[in-house]
Length: 310
Image (cartoon, rainbow, N blue to C red; front, top):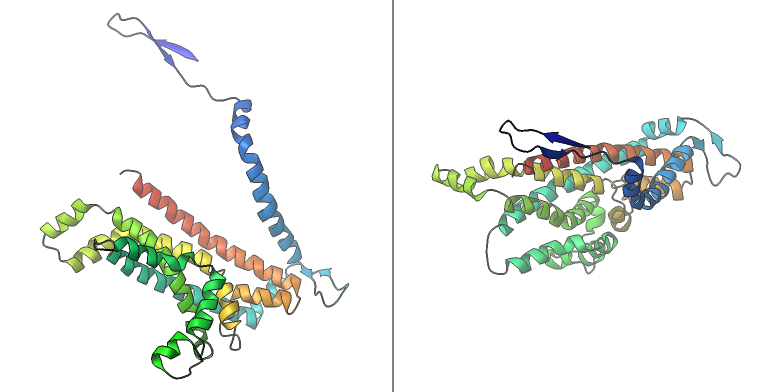
């Protein structure tokens, strides 16, 4: 649509072109290339989840053929009242919170060190990132055999003795391996925030007489808060699903000291063969992950809004 605007000075009218809304064919022509990806995402994510919801309403034990029947929400009641599953939920919270908090603190310290210039900083940064590039199963095997083994492990080689570290400190053993692997992830996020900090602000704080500790606690930490929250929330989303380290290092033991929710779902499915109960536990775990993911997306949006004015 074209309109003309006439100025008061007698100048010739100037045409103004107003953008027109694209018609339906144009909109679909833009969306069509994305449809295969959308269909693929629905097939591989939503359809299995809907089938899991259906299974969670069934009483189905593979060891009893013909015993499958509809039970409604009974499996969810079993999940929320079962002592084993409640213990697994507590272990999941302890494992996730301990790993995330320690990873964020160590990542913050390493990021502060790497933010300074020193010879060989690029090599040091590459070496510190390496643990995050190791496959989770390979990392768990490394810690179990090369470090924790009571006969030839590195810890007993350094401190002496024949301590079975996995049996004596099962939760600590798993948390240590996860912290080693996830600290580089936190470090990268925090380091990106540090390198985006305004040098003028830091210089102004020094001119006003602030010391290094005051600058760090009153200027740098408040600035890094969105990055710290982002790292903690993204780490929580991944670590709440931890299975490799628990399965490889402790197999949930001794007893059920390190059995978290994903490993308990595995036991319910492949040891007890209670498919309906395992599906209900999986749905509960997914809902909890969605809640954490929603918080992470809110932090991301606030971070982007903070970056826009720059």
